[in-house]
Length: 162
Image (cartoon, rainbow, N blue to C red; front, side, top):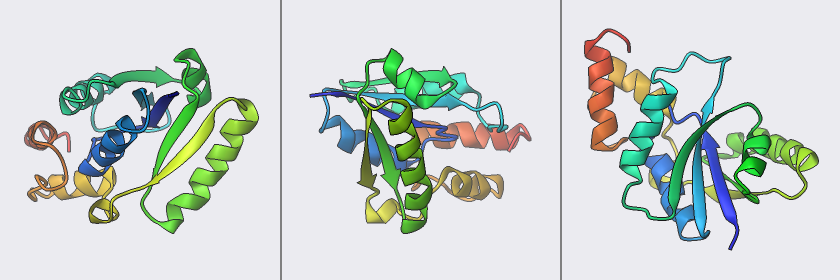
């Protein structure tokens, strides 16, 4: 089976992201969770923190590798010999942007296909933005993120960084 890559900012990783990671790990020999270094955004967590959180979350999934990259997603996919790009869809509103990205990626790298996975219904409303907002106001986010991510969010809030 092909190597798949699941790219994203994961700022922070949510249970919705983990659902996509676990499901794709059953479909492919190897899944590379690729943390994007986006210079246009000011993330809450550093790329190193996001990679560490993801590695902790995925430590029991043997065919998942976590790495980070800067630049075009398709360039990193080629570097990693990935032939499939995994993208999660929460709602029809995600589809418009994701299909545009998929077509652009395919135009730049015809050997890389995009596979869309519908997010599990119980996570369809969830986003990293919502989690950061809830954590900022001191809400319990344990149902949205793994324990290590919740701890990191609390630490950011207490440090005045959230």
